[in-house]
Image (tube, rainbow, N blue to C red; front, side, top):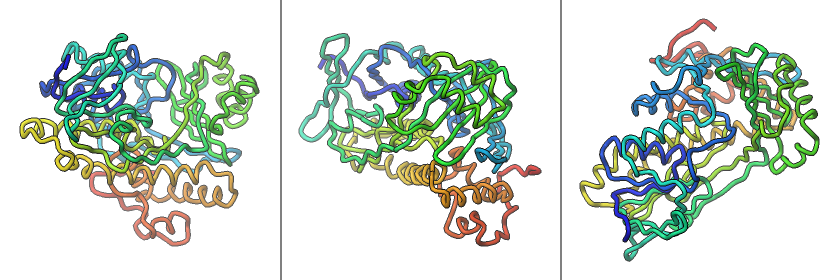
Length: 426
């Protein structure tokens, strides 16, 4: 063996980086392997939900986010394309201090987490390190082999953690059966200068059409536009002018902003998929985040749930190291704790994708009725918000709630809010 450590984490994404930092703060010998050559760059929409903010606060990261790169957003307005406002979600219903969504510059929080990890524990983060295979002793995983700067490095570890995304090579090496589902919809994401006035998030929904507009600091805006999967080549063939025209037709109030889209380098293509691993653990190893439970972005919780995974693990790992027990039976306590919540969010995201993305006029009609009910029903609206914010473990709707949301039954508790919610005048 050329290197020894207590914990090796494959992947320095949202979950792997948070876990690496959390373990470093506990002075646990940890090595994080990242195949990219440096911190992430490029275009992607970044929204920190309240549960993610709380985690960053606990790690001392939230206060490090530059004020001029973070935009707190209180209201999310859902609008019918070609019609009016359907519903407004007000984050002020949530208890402070985490009662806003934070829209940040791309990769901002992630980059600061990686910097904090390197400062806290130098040489614990290896860039350009590609996972090659697991090392085993009998049936127990005892380390990994990686390629670093063109040479093979064997790393002995008491615990191996795969945090390497929905197409996880660690998961594959662990022979964990996994259902991978590619959604028929993907997204074009852009960040543009915003000479227009956009104070609040606008989410425009039509038939097989979604345009999300998220205000960013320094007079910028994220544009998130739904397209059929594998259609980016066709979108580019149609040209930038066609894309600008579509966006302007949907939301003409930002026509000057859309005119600042002048180069395809201002855009990125974001495919969508879901991963459901049959188990998250093996003897000496486990997986987290998208490697275990990737979900549709409609849940607005994919990265947040990887972060939660990391924090839960960071509480268990010191005990496992102290006891010297890394069996699957012991590690399964992590999966038992986390799986019910993430599977609830996966189901919620799939349901939202079915209704929000629909081209069926009947389904779209029912969807719009639900949004209109939510706008009047504070109880149901709070339940949806709490799930989106990562503060709810159970589904926001039961069967009776669904009938009430569609308007088939009255809700005698429509104005009731749970303890801890902040009552506001709608």
